[in-house]
Image (cartoon, rainbow, N blue to C red; front, side, top):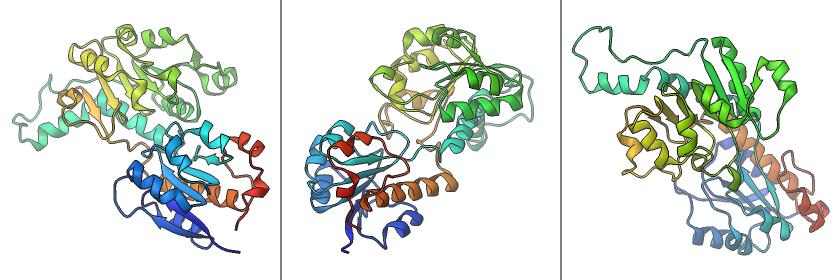
Length: 336
């Protein structure tokens, strides 16, 4: 049987390539950055499969440019960068990689929380810039304690749950809001459900773990930030547009809240003129919450396995749009 043709939009961990190689002729974008839209359209023209990242926008035009496409496999938990409705209409299966990055992202949310609470990045710059002139001072870099404080979680999915579980080691009171109340987890973890606004009012640390959708665009804006305590910190490892950055900048500058730890931004990479870069009470990271070897290797493996399953005419481990079967049964995707 002939090999399938697959386009990989970025260099990925070798484990993913090793899974694809025996079955596929692979073309990999050689550049570090993502391909342009025109490059994507050109490369998918004769491809059976597309393996992409969340940095590539797989819209209606790109999908239409690949008449042979049977599967779009994304190395990501989110899939709002893909026009899933258009793919489904054409009988193209969309897959993703949930679960494998839960621990890495939950860990990093805590890294940002602790970093902003104790002003770690600010202190690091202070030392590196040779500004440390007095050995110790009672008022030097005063931060916020974490132990026995209140943690507010917005979104109790896999990652939000992981963050909540880690909070027990700090004897924190954990409150949460989710669009669906999860009473079983409340009992298992020992957490309390509150209405959205009450989480914001009560928490010393608010950490966001919701998917990005029209309903969550600017979920945290001026009015929500005004509800938070002046000593509170906001942590975001979900998606940048969930937070209104302009409002957050004002909140940090005018000390409505004490600090923020951000791994994601409304526009990535961040604009060099973004005023958040000027604020010492913001800890900023370049979208690296899942950047552990274990997590990224696992994501590459799952994305490759998802893609191969579709091209074998089998149900993949993680499918976004099972409705695609109504347009093109899996028996019609088997080419390897």
